[in-house]
Amino acid sequence: MPTKDYYEVLGVARDASPDEIKRAYRTLARKHHPDVADDKAQAEHLFKEINEAYEVLSDPNKRAHYDRFGTVGGPGGGGDAGFGGFGPGGFGDIFDMFFGDMRGGAPRRNGPQRGSDLRYDLEITLEDAFAGTTREIQFSHLAQCESCKGSGAQPGTLIVQCDRCGGSGAMRSVRQTPLGQFVTQSVCTQCGGEGTVIPQPCATCHGRGRHEVERKLTVKVPAGVDDGSRIRIAGNGEAGIRSGPAGDLYVYLSVAAHPIFRRDGLDTYVDVPISYPQATLGASIEVPSLEGALPLTIPAGTQSATTLRLRGRGMPSVRGSQRGDHHVTVHVVVPTKLNKKQKELLEEYARMGGDAIEERSFLDRVKDAFRPE
Image (cartoon, rainbow, N blue to C red; front, side):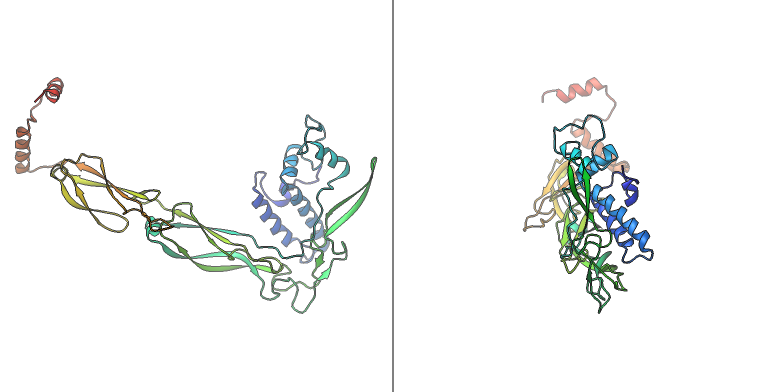
């Protein structure tokens, strides 16, 4: 049974994602590394706890077992103690309960390591998505230390082999069990599994080889992007370790809701009011679109809520020259105020069409509607 809650050690919630656990570990490992801390003894103790917690919580099987039983070894009772499987609760966990974890060592990590990818969330307008745009963004990231060129050592000094683990990055221990002698290994608490130590850490980055800086970058957003699209900017993530390649920056786009237009894929939609005479007699009007006012012909006798299509006037495609359509739904607006002349003309129109204005029963109106001509 661990002496401390591993989630508390890393300062994360019990439902933390693997990325959140990794970030917490990296932050704490940098802060409490014995080579950069003032209190070496205390830092070494904390560094050991941090590594133990990360070793369990970063392994899906170990984490699942730990969440279920509160231990790193076997179940210690219950219905999962059989030999039916080799996953959590199966033979592998029974084996570990007696002999320790012999499956995972503490490999040396003294080679180049790629930097982590970064994510930046950027909101744009629908007009930006239609025409494309450029935006300047600002974010913080770990950049290679210019003073030590990423080595972590003070310029002019050397990085030496760890004398505690002999450069292996692992601490080995031997245990006597009823079944014989078994050797287990864990991450070296002095070098953190690196196999090397830095006697004189760089004054700028404190031995980490990287330091956090603010950066500005111009992002080009192509025309036609949709909500949820992402733009990959290679090599603009966090700097690599020991001259490893930098990670990438991913810009995730969210398109703000528009007060007039709607979008569905490459097609755009808009609602436009028209008058009763325009719907009845037909008309040529201008309708709004993302590229400005467009001419639209209203056929005579158009009914309210009719949708008319302007082909090829919708959103452009990010790939290729294809464009969607612009859909215009017209709504006939009934006038609420008429002057005397307008009212007389409308009444005359009604009489000529056989539409009586005087009050009639519902049954009479139904009969008139279905009376053959």
